[in-house]
Image 1 (spheres, rainbow, N blue to C red):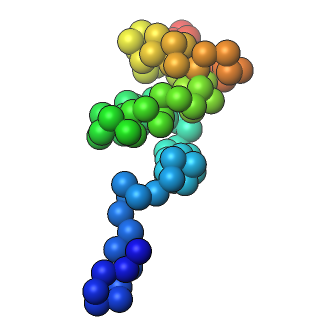
Image 2 (image 1 turned 180 degrees about the horizontal axis):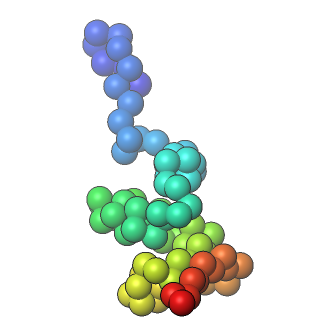
Length: 90
């Protein structure tokens, strides 16, 4: 896509879902994944749909995130294998 000046005018909305997911996977660190996924899924309906459709994005569960985040992860991870981090305080 080019505008009349010949410069590129590609927007994030024109990216295919697969490329958008790769960008999300690249920029979201695993340790902070849940909170970042929640934030990104609040940007627009498309991003929410794309993110919530990929169960492996939600399969990292950190017990320190709190019960609402853990419940959301369990719901959206569907049947994906889980990675669970849970530390007890001694």
